[in-house]
Length: 165
Image 1 (tube, helix red, strand yellow):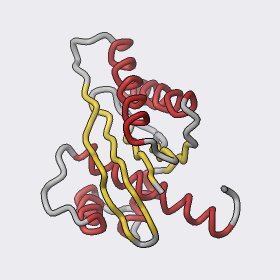
Image 2 (cartoon, rainbow, N blue to C red):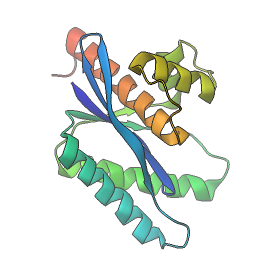
Image 3 (cartoon, rainbow, N blue to C red):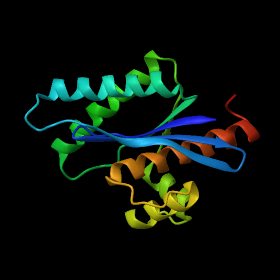
Image 4 (cartoon, rainbow, N blue to C red):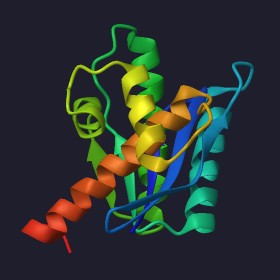
């Protein structure tokens, strides 16, 4: 199965395309969709939307794993991330790609077995599981790979034990 993992953001929106066949896990591509502070909010959201649409067209994922939002103490940042997540969900919806929402806790548990794992631990496990020997930069791309892999495991579990076809 091919999954497009997304770590929502307006400044940097991480993406990771993951193929999972049986126990084999392959990172197909990963990186970020980047916008700049001097751009208007609408320009930035449009860049994220178009970038996600291009990724869907190029890689044809069967599912999209999109991280859910957790409460952020900076409400302005939280709103902007929520807006980015909205256009990401819209891009998937318009192209008939099922969305698999995953929480940060689920990603940490799936990758490390511990829900309070640090970012470095998650990144290290992503590298090990996917056979990546170089640093993944920026961290948003590594997060997106982890989100994609977590979504793949969730879909696989539902297919095996019911709930999703």
